[in-house]
Amino acid sequence: MTHDRFSAGPHWLPAAAQRPRMSAAWWRWVASRGSLTAQLRAASTQPFGVRLLAQGISRPRHTEARALGLDPRARIWRREVMLMLGDTPWVAARSVAPLASLHGARLQSLGTRSLGSWLFRQPGLKRGPIEIIRSPAPTLVTAFGRATPWGRRSVLRLGHTAILVQEFFLDAMDADLALSSR
Ligand SMILES: C=C(O[C@@H]1C=C(C(=O)O)C=C[C@H]1O)C(=O)O
Image 1 (cartoon, rainbow, N blue to C red):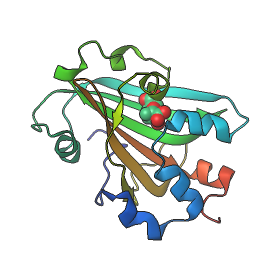
Image 2 (tube, rainbow, N blue to C red):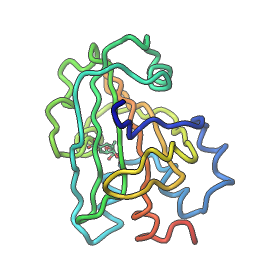
Image 3 (cartoon, helix red, strand yellow):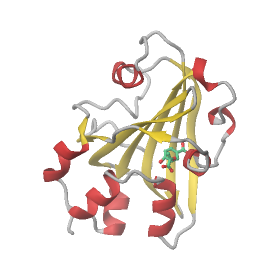
Image 4 (cartoon, rainbow, N blue to C red):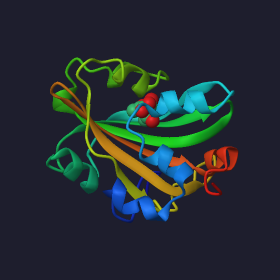
């Protein structure tokens, strides 16, 4: 069985439903609607980087298909990365987009450039509601560190292209920014 970094167990809920369960400092990260890349860059003196873990054609998870309004058998492009500050991973991210809608989109050629640094420059970008999950499956233990309880996702739309961006915050970010204690 392949190691599945991103099989999240519990349910995705609207951000407001999860707010009482998190600190104000976490809320400012998990519920923000701007570019996470830009927020990460501003929060650390360490250089921001993207470590590409995997990308390619796949099938969506059921929860991803539902979020994108897709048939679970539809083919999607998946991109799994670690967002790094210096040598420390702070966020694990999995973004998926229907292959049919990717025509002309840059997801496939991004490499180690941040998806957000391209997306948030596009005029007409629309971001759907932020959903939050608590305690993503403990399987999100990577060679880079353990996950915090928090993950978030939203669908970003650019014309006919829809991209579900899922971000799971790692312990090192919590420790470096002392988010749980504020
Ligand atoms: C959507 C954004 O892009 C970030 C960069 C990603 C990537 O390069 O794959 C994935 C998730 C995001 O955290 C953002 O910066 O908000």
